[in-house]
Length: 358
Image (cartoon, rainbow, N blue to C red; front, top):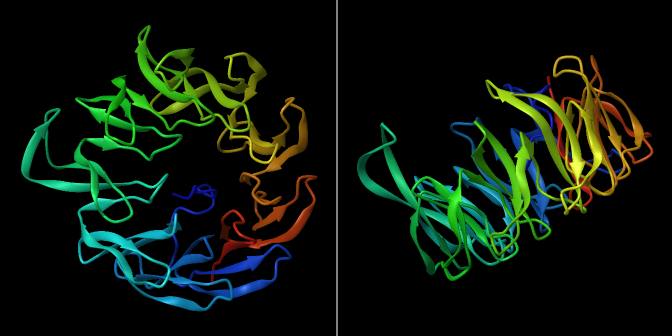
């Protein structure tokens, strides 16, 4: 699933707005013509023609040519050779030819990771859960032949990552292996994917939610102590010290290593994961804060100056300043594609989807 970069600039796409694709020189590969556009993955990109509710989704190649006609109600990027598709209320998977690899039969599904994908089957009727009446479903896992290898049984199920997947049983999160065996007992109130051997988990401790990290045996290797936490990336993880009230973080962010040692002291008002050696950090509040980039020593290598700033991908990051449009910088902070777009995504496979607003 892609990460939204520009929530401060874009909350939705208006009628008349069009997406296209540029290369790293800023030249158009596909002129703005699509009503939505996703990153390129495995040589193809999902595009939408028409509105959010009634539009249809298909795929283009790197010349901008439509190679799978827009016909799907829901479609996402290709992953491990298949793309998640929903049509007429049921979900399945297609190959890059557009042919069904696994015909629509599920009530929900997600992309393949490490050879398996989560799929949902609704349970008929309405069940009361935590005092609320709701239609419920159970999640299981299929392989690329469409065979159900782990029967639908979980209220929540995550992607497999490093051989394990987070699942929910009786309102607690734990982890299963690819046979469906529970290898880390459900005991956490929330749990993230494993990354670089560790996963972040949340428990209620000392009257508040706190995050820590476990290894693949389930051992707590970094004790729960953080108000917010991110996955490990390039050896470091973003953590926040402070409190959360009304879903708002009131504290400072820094970075720890895998021993739990604070290697970059909490000093930032927002911070992202390290990517290609740099991480986005913010100084100041949500309304007036400025974003820049630090290296792994905590040194500010690109001074805070941007209203919007995304992670580096393929050497470039999307940025914007107050009262301007969006463009891309390199790792020196040099603007290599001028501020001219109303929205955009990371570069993937040499191209980025960008928005032009009428």
